[in-house]
Length: 116
Image (cartoon, rainbow, N blue to C red; front, side, top):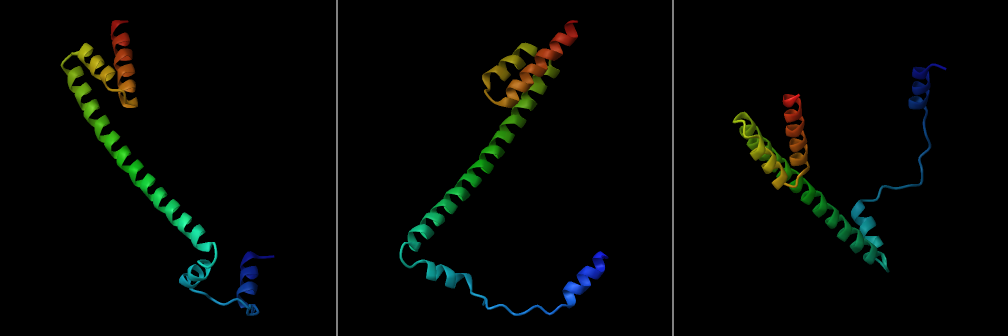
């Protein structure tokens, strides 16, 4: 069966009306607040707020780490251009970020290549 023919048949077929009616979301929330529903709604609202807090906190942390990594890489680059290799290694060791560890290994591997 051709796919286009299939969609034409479906779109031209009159489907029976269901017994469902459209209900605004505020009506559903208002009806769910009876009994213990308000506790569940409050818990959901608190969890939503906490998840938004975690999301924003992670974004701010990642931005701060990115800025620190850029500053560190620029400082190491400046030191290496001035042939201050030991100072660059000390700077990498003083910072406990993953970027510092990667730069330290890069500097060590570069030194090993130059010696050989």
